[in-house]
Image (cartoon, rainbow, N blue to C red; front, side):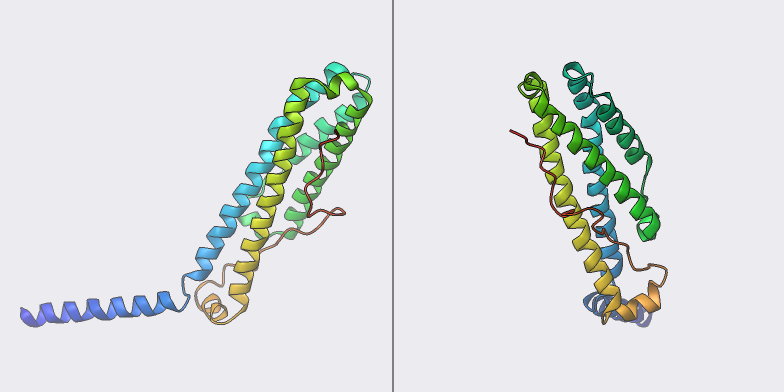
Length: 202
């Protein structure tokens, strides 16, 4: 009985030692960094959704003062519909075509919003409307949050990609995580894409 107990204790000690050694040599880095990429992407989506949620009220407010700007208003509504129709799942993060499609739709919405905000310059009553000013401020804050979320996502993807391309992560990737490919990252689809658009026209 004592021999059995001793053997079990010895096996547990060896298992603990092996687990400690493996944990210390980065075996868990790849799945950890992969989860950080997914978490960072969720923040990107959250901020784009926040922007999309502001747009209906913004359009209605502008419409109340500038109904003749129907073309601009329609462009914003259509761009929003297109942007919100493209959903990127965790699996889609490895698909360059899907990522480009998402980026282009968001970029088109950014452009349409910029044109809508420029319209306000022609309407002093609109520019001084409290509801419009509040929405404008929220939109500006959201654009800044989008820029931060994108930056964090880019950093998470770089950390993950670097891990599976360098030693010892490259070894663990080939042995245990070969089903986890290089992640696609954001690319600049518009000029100065890394900067948050300016929406304050005062």
